[in-house]
Image 1 (spheres, one colour):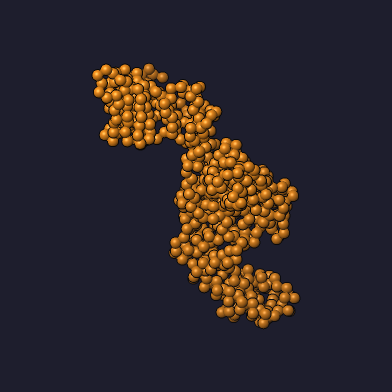
Image 2 (image 1 turned 90 degrees about the vertical axis):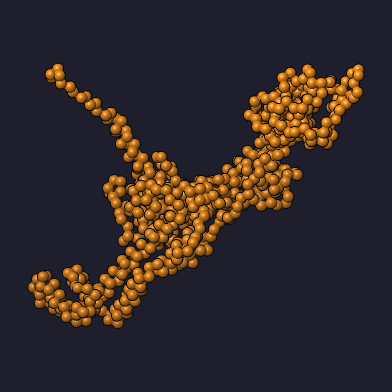
Length: 640
């Protein structure tokens, strides 16, 4: 290499880094698309789709062991039997698609399902009729290439909003709350009729729901238990919020009772087919306040956030409830159209087939093949024999048609019933005309289809969660008398764990104002036991706008001051007077006048003086105040 030449050195990128990046992206994409996030088209996650496909393949109308279905689904789902079993039990508990027999657990108590070998399941009639159609299903190879599984099920039901869904993937998550099946169908009818609609969640546990912040599926809702007052000191919980169980409700109530948030004497669980938790209140406890405390401090009230993220096509997308149900409605119309088109083709084929058979037998065309020496001659003889009757056929005669005629059994030919065949053809023509009519009036046909579903399942799937507007609970008011504040002046301690007669009661949310005779003051949270020395001249609930009146003395004079403390930082010490002073009097009551008595001195005309407070302006905490006197003050009194 010559000395005047130069070479650019290009270092290769780190191959390990590239490998990790590529593999992570593949993993993230797999988790998002194939495990955690449901598909918009049929509303299902892959494991749910594979379970339903396995049930459809095994379906004979009878119950089948869950373990059998799990084993069958494993040829499609590469993640083990536990995930399949959990997903199947979850679907069965939602009741729409899978009918269970045996112990599938209890949504109310949180009890788990029995082992898969002890319980049985089958498809519901709704699932069997509404989400399967092999003629409309696109199949793909399973993970090992040995089987075919559906890419998407041709569901005519809005399963995504019916079932709800939760999933956490890489970088995103989804939480779709379940909605009422009948209300979804009615919303689809409203969309087809171009009317307004509104959809809100509905839960199998019932309860009360405030959905004012639902924001069409991307906001939040508040759920409350249904609590009944009875016999003054007894509360009965009949319905609980979604995502809770009777066990978690009771545990939260017991925890609140230990913290003295709610005063109860006992709690009993009599839940069976229906929730019944009986709470016995302590004597004298106000039931209304107890209910408010249960809503605030326990799982009798929960807030659920909703975010609708789905896989649409090949990528995740955030949508609203309205967008999802409109998509489902468009898909329903498309599926119904395709079904009608397929049925129309099938009816035409059947009519063509029956006409061919009738012509073939009635005109004894089969006699023409008796002298034929080759199979080709046989085919030509049949084609030639059918040719004069071409105007009776729907379409041209194909070689497949001739093959079908030649496959007819002698018994079928000899026992041919012309009258019955004509009746069957008339039925086919009638149905074919109706199918063509439905295709021309597709929107009306879809509306009737949905209305039939509403009529059939309306009584079975009624709304369980009651709509209400939850009142905001004023926690400060609820806990206003919770903490007794005691000041032990002899030892200099203040707090709600100090022994003695309480000066007042307050809420844990309140803040206390402590003022010492030196003018130092601070704001603190209500303490259990706080040492403040013996020089405390005022303690009370902090209110930044409350007007105080104080008289304080320096070495040379006494001052009268009216002010509000204003804002303060927690636990920080401030001063409301001057250096080296002593507060002689402080009050937060509305006063009219202050009277000062002085030590008698020779030549003094008066020994006391009254000050009208309405003449003294209210200032800030740092103001020095009005200089009342330079004489020595012996007594201070006030008048309201």
